[in-house]
Image 1: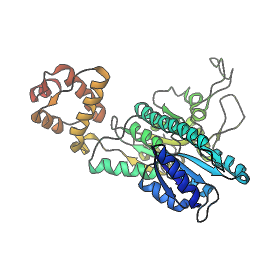
Image 2: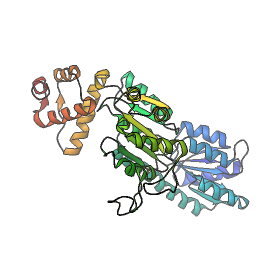
Image 3: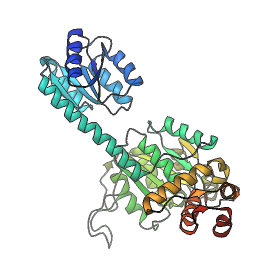
Image 4: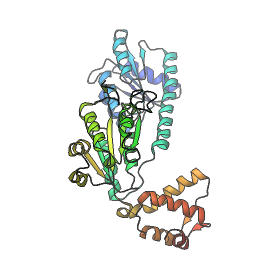
Amino acid sequence: MKILIIDDERSIRNSLKEILADEGYDVDVAENGQQGCEMVEKEKYDVIFCDIKMPVMDGVETLAKLNSMGIDSAVVMISGHADVDTAVDCIKKGAFDFIQKPLDLNRILITIKNAKDKVHLVKETRSLKKKVYGQEMVGESPAIKEIKDMIEKVAPTDARVLVMGANGTGKELVARNLHQKSNRSAMPYVEVNCAAIPSELIESELFGHEKGSFTSAIKQHKGKFEQADGGTLFLDEIGDMSLAAQAKVLRVLQEKKLSRVGSDKDIVVDVRVVAATNKNLKDEIAKGTFREDLYHRLSVIVIKVPTLDQRKEDIPLLVDHFMGQICQETGMQPRKVEPEAMKLLIDKTWTGNIRELRNVVERLLILSGASITADDVKTYVY
């Protein structure tokens, strides 16, 4: 377990380092917040002890900087008696704990143990999120690298994103990655397929309704915007949303508040909206089926997801990825894909994109023999 001690008093940081090293911990020290943050950029620490009163960069500023860096470390503030109020404020701002001076060894060791559990929980939560939200985008083609770079730049902001691309290209995966890599990742991620909800129910689904507001409204219902408060709302197939619902979505984006169906009470919401569509929204605007003002609100950042035919060099990686995924889910044994078979898969025209490729890999796993041959591909794919 790696620990960093940030304290401007040499006697405190050195004695604390010596004590923790005797307990078997790997310990580094920094004499101020700026130096500590520079060390964190180069090294991963499980626990960081940070004094509050320091020159150059005090503990509060250091905590804010560490939070902005998105680290997993448990930050423990070291406080003198006069700084208790400040320390409590630090807890509210994300510090794991605070310890008063003079330092007590037992208190420190208990805090480290608790911090270790917290770090483990954070890592476990991230692993679970990957299972729920999906993995990183698979591929090394220039088109996919460009999207990955865009996600890294855009995710930490609250900018609205419009994801465009054909069916099956992975627009949902882009949205999930935007949420995972954002500062809202610990908050809800809510998906809405606008094309799958009847037009007469879309407003209730998005904005909620009060009990008795219509015949089947037997109890109060929170809409997707409320459910996603503090997090991310993914509006899939936004091009299929009715004009009436578009007007209400526009109001929420402009005013950051909504009213449930059957109520005139405003509810304030803090939601980042990511929208996706397989339609050309500018064409829909020309037809009068999509609001131009909503388009401009949604398209602060536009990410265009390429078709599989535009990133064929990624097919071997995707085949390997899907094979591992499917085998883990079903208990089937992986198969070797013969070079001639892989060439046929690369040469195929993929009208269904990534979704079609995954189905094909599963089909070949079920129907092929000891390995996947060119004959298998010709028989079961073409």
